[in-house]
Image (cartoon, rainbow, N blue to C red; front, side):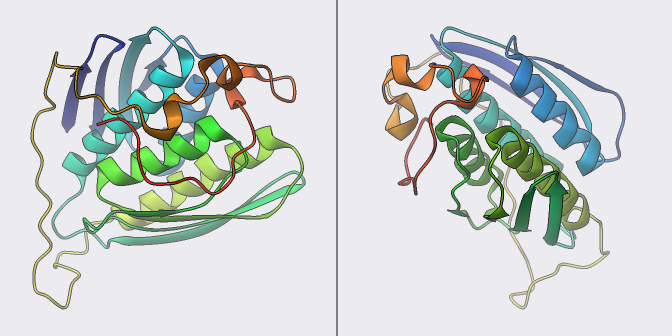
Length: 223
């Protein structure tokens, strides 16, 4: 079990991940985000308890990604299989995910939503993962984003299998995990996700939580 508590002037989040599975409860006040996190946990085969409150939607979504990534990092066994790769159809959409949870951060996207592309980048960074998401086809951004969460969940399910041996030619993979710092939000880098708060929260394709279509993002964001 791995628990992270993250508190800033903008958000308060508590998340617990159980690698062995268990009950899934999510409450972020953002219905689409709740749906995606419930879907992700079910497909990943993990137990999840996540409670989050925040001022603006884009702050909340990004900080949930940070806390969830850190909690997942703490749940990864040192002898994890490390790698996962899945391709998921969601109606007209087809999304491919490849991940390595061995402690090296890299993200390659994008998915066509500024908010959720940045979610994936922040999740990869704070879980110490190399994450590639490829939209092979699709026109409905809801379907593409949901397909991405499903593919990510299934890929993580494979990557977290305990292989009984360290899966590295170096002989060891260091996965360090500590408690998140509380309170000091002064150094909280806003990065690309801060953006235009008005534009980020405009309705997109009938779902205001998807934000604007994403291009290839730059590294950055909140710490």
